[in-house]
Image (cartoon, rainbow, N blue to C red; front, side, top):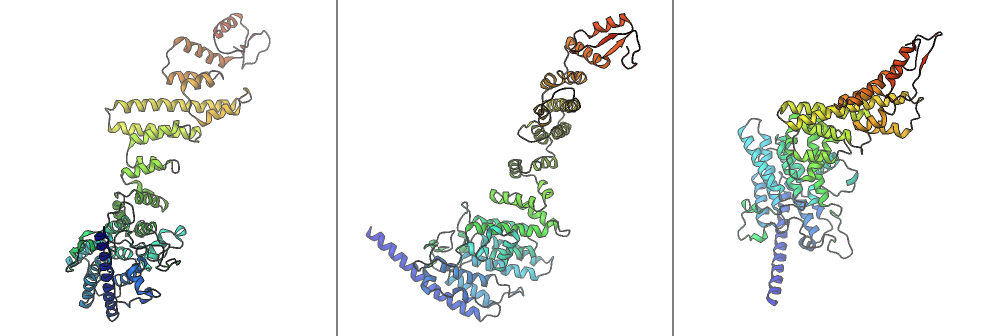
Length: 536
């Protein structure tokens, strides 16, 4: 145990001395950087009010130094496309002598930005431009796997996150020298729109519970004699602070830098940058193809949190038609979950994707769903849509017995629903003849009724004989006794009440109306004047 304690203490002492020496070298290199015309002035103000010990020992001191270095890395002062040898030597020196502070993300960012600057300076169609563009993307992808500071990604403190839109978040990250924002800007200029999405989502992954952690390929670009494997990214790994994040090294004081910045803010910035460039391209006459290229990359991401944010953004920003043209399982599931909020979206998606069977099933289920507050005419429209969808599906699969049965059943349901609408109109016009309570009318108006219910509870009791006959026809009812009785009732309703001068005729009429459901049979014999309308 004593040896383990001694080893731990010696290890801590070694790290403390190494960080101290590297910080001294770093400050020396930064002084030299101030004299280089190709680089901007070092922002020494970011280190104002902090002690040397805090820069060595604390997380927030590490973040202060990284912000200074990031400012140098993301600088656009030098735009000629050819980086000076002095600047390259400075970057090498920082990588070799100050790797506890100059992170893998800084180094990859530097290499990526230099390749991008050179590519931008070359004419379109130039083979070297294409090569340097690919090289820049490769370096920036590696850099994205090593960006772990929320403050660095967001560009500054987030004070109004809840009220900010994606454009404000994206623009703030650009103004705050976010390396991610700078990478997106270069990639957009180079026409590499797919990698804008890839780099943003790789960065977002660093701040999620599924992040892959440190990129172990850093040795590829750092040639440091004696560099131990455990030292790679020791102070740049994903959210593993070596001292409390809550204090600045002084008891009772709250750290000032990045206190309100969280991993969630960083993820929001990553998503906002994607949406920012989508908004620039989608709907633009000359850049719409670029936007759709980004959409095609977005929809096949595996991050469900991003996908849901992306789907929502597309709908809220007027790109519904573009989104619904995408064939993607996660989109279909998301639309199914959103049916209560956006009931027509899933139906439109099925229609655009020519998923006729699914569209028919959805329309049929909605027509019969008593939980939906729909009037009868809307339910009839859903049945008509279901019938047309099943017909279209059957055209593509004529041997499907199940589809044929569904189509036949839906056709019958639609005809009964239309008869129900006729019953509703008849009852509304006969309100003076019958005492009809509001609940009965609401039942007709708010739900679909089966053929038996429509016949026995409405059409037959209220003497709607023609509708009864039509219900029999739709249902292929073949009981001759019932049909005969109904026809007699129907015909009787057409001539009663009536008057005749012929006793034989009267007897025949009385015999005819026997067995009908008409209660008040009014047939009279008269020798006097008779109205032509009632004379039989």
